Amino acid sequence: MKFDLEAAKRGEPIRLVSDNNGFIDVTFVAHAPEAREHTRIVVVSESGVIILCGEDGVSGNHSLEMAPKKIKRWFNVYRHEEYGFDLGCRFFANAEEASTFGSEKTGYIKTISIEIEL
Image 1 (cartoon, rainbow, N blue to C red):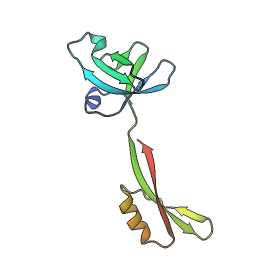
Image 2: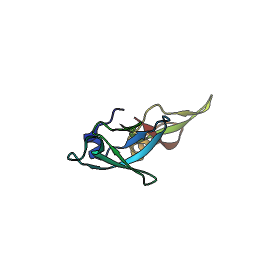
Image 3: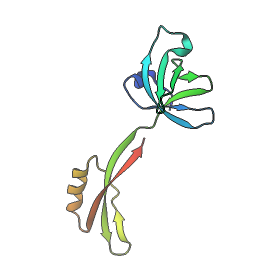
Image 4: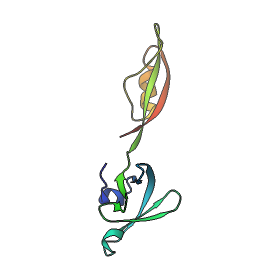
């Protein structure tokens, strides 16, 4: 996703696309609009390397982009006569809601969480 300076300033996740098309998770540190054009954004990598970028997110052969957002959702597992088990096709925003819904259904086994990238 295209780099969004305002979203990065709000703390939304960003990553650096390296010249070999790999991704490096970085943390937004500062925006210095008075700095030279290509050094106005300061980010730091997980390994502690400081990277300077322009407001467009470009730094030489590297560029910033918005990282996918991850959300957690829950779904239910049910017994199924023919297949042994069946997964519920409905996602729930929290475990309590999912298990309450599932416990009211015949064959409810368990509620499971999954992390989804948007």
